[in-house]
Image 1 (cartoon, rainbow, N blue to C red):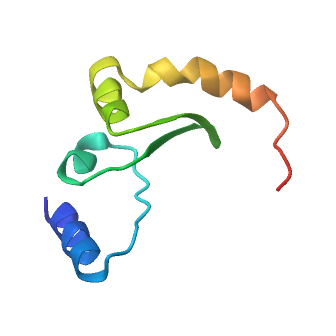
Image 2: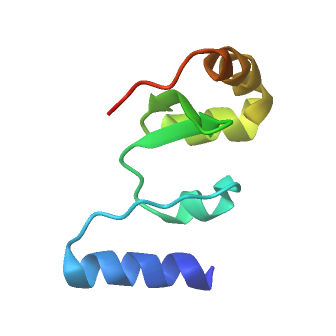
Length: 79
C-alpha cells in the first residue's frame, strides 16, 4: 500500500527507527519488521520477532486475550 511505501522510503532516506502502532497486521507484511510487541488493555503481553505477525494472522489475536486479562489484574509498575 501507499502508506507502507512512504514508511519504507522514509526509513531508507533517514536511517531512523520507527514505531508502528496498528490494529491490523496487513501493513506489517510490507515492512522490514525487527521486533513485535502485542498489547492488550494497555499492557504488553507478548513480544517477539516478525514471526509473531504470522502467528497473529494464523491463530488470531484472541490467543493473547487471556494474558491481557491476567495483566489487567496486576498493578502497573512505576517507572
